Image 1 (cartoon, rainbow, N blue to C red):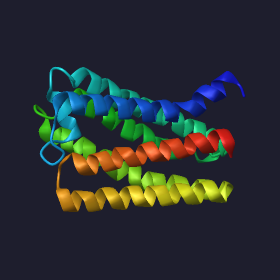
Image 2: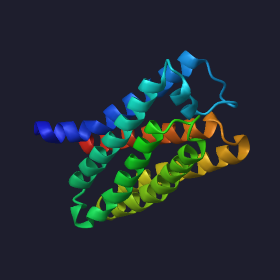
Image 3: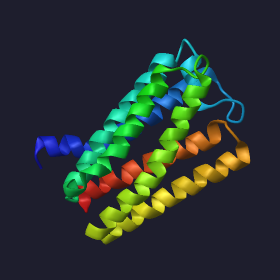
Length: 187
């Protein structure tokens, strides 16, 4: 495997580890409550705001790179528009990282909603296009995306705007990344 291909393929794993480690460190450092705080509250703390912002920006950039790696593997470049929602979501993540939750609460919340409303339909469409090329990978991708979307929505309805639906969403994206990292290397 070429070094560039290896780096592209591993970007999803790096993304999953960076977002998990960054958010986990911020959360435990601040000793937040799952039902009272959101993940974005980590961006308001002097101790954790830089790590939170860096993790979010790194996650957004690596997701775009990882999307390109997946498209390369499954020869989806004739549908290059598939990368545009990932780029849009990454830009929203950068905006979320720059505009903290305390000062820009409404804009920050709008960007977060935009990320969710962009990535869930996109991951379903993306899985559909992969399904046309590689049936098992596309099917598993669709299942993960459906569980991610429904689980996040249901946990939001049950718990409201707190860390629980956000953690479910981020955890689902991490599972999606780990699955596709495996698929890129071994399928």
